Length: 317
Ligand code: PMV
Image (cartoon, rainbow, N blue to C red; front, side):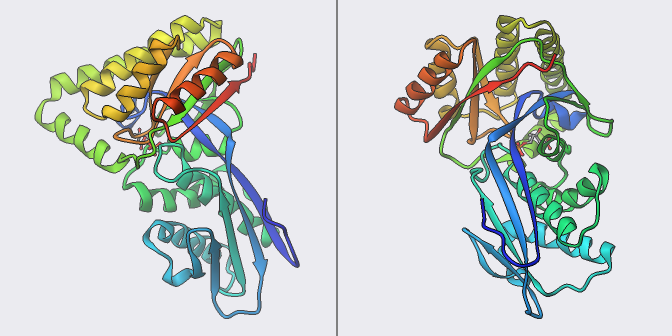
């Protein structure tokens, strides 16, 4: 956490995991995402006497106007917030800290944008509800991802697992019994934008087959929802495996993800799949106990993962 001083706004946002439905969600199919509060982003807005806005983060330290591409979306959204609040674009520094690896399908850009925007509203002591906050996060997300479904920012905001359909009101999902996930990072940047575009091309050139895979992902996502609501972890694992089969058919997995997924299954995971955009990034594996998840995280590290976390998803029923 960053230490506050003088007049400040402080806020935090968590990373997210897409449990089921990535890519199909772009085609208005449902997806399930869960908060991943093991990795968080935080922001502090600190008053200065400067005539400009500064950004202070571990990746960039300097004037907001000269920020590198990956921060420009956030700069645009802050600009929009200040216009909305009718405040001058000067006189504070935006401190950003994030534990969320960038470009790994864990929702780093949405979490950072949400933390910063919440902190700006807090700094000016203006209350902002979910729809107002996300309106500004969306500006940063569109800059980062082109035309995102919106699942990342919804999941960054919500504290419980969500059932998300693009353009519809987000619901939370009741979780009957706790379950355990291992999240493992291939250590390689995911290529969400390229992966989404490649499926779009397939959709144009081979509609029937692409639609079939998307529909199968949607069916598996419904199965997963029922499994979560009734506490049937083996059924959830099977749904995850089916989603991975279809994501592979769609061409968005890769060797590094496939190797970790195969290893997780071989070591007893109930199911395993990529999470997020794919083509690099992270995979997730399901287990029925925390100790199994912790052991599996070690095995995935030994098997080539650059980082791995074991995580308990609480029951909400
Ligand atoms: O930003 P990522 O890598 O977590 O991917 C988001 C999920 C996709 O379905 C691949 C894209 C989207 O806009 O929903």
